[in-house]
Amino acid sequence: MIALIDYGAGNLTSVRKAFAAVNAQIVTPAAPEDLADVPALVVPGVGHFGATRSLDAAWREAIERRIDSGALLLGICLGLQWLFDGSTEAPGVAGLARIAGVCDRLDDRGGTLKVPHVGWNALSIARPSRLLDGVEDGAYVYFTHSFAAPVTAETVATSSHGGPFAAAVESGRIMGVQFHPEKSGETGLRILRNFVALAGRT
Image (cartoon, one colour):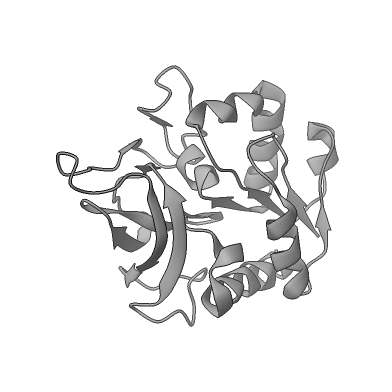
């Protein structure tokens, strides 16, 4: 059972379909207390970091309680950025702060590079990862974003658009991908299968 958290930051239909394709059972909790027994959580999202304000104190406390009790957490796109301290896109909005660092706008190289970064780009695997098990170095995945997380010790894969950024992170039970696995073909499905398998072992 995986809880897909809907905080109004994007259409969840494609994420649900992708998890269904890997035989995962998805629930969308209506309230923080509905997270009480789930073994894994997914925080997706697209758009402005300010949208994460909807994950208020009650939701944050419930999410952190589940993680501290052994549940896995996967952040997708904006959800990955939320794992960090915050973003220059919305300076007054705090992230979950489970990974140190601040997300920033991609470098457009003085207007010579298009931002947002939209389309397929290669992953550079930085170190072994349970989430990316079986994903080859150089595999292509689908991105759409203007801001990105810095490369930190928790980074397990990078990509580059105006400079390197964290494409995937993993720190214990905390995981995240900047790209959209639900739009990334077989590579994306492999990553979701890995997450579902890990959730089954919690």
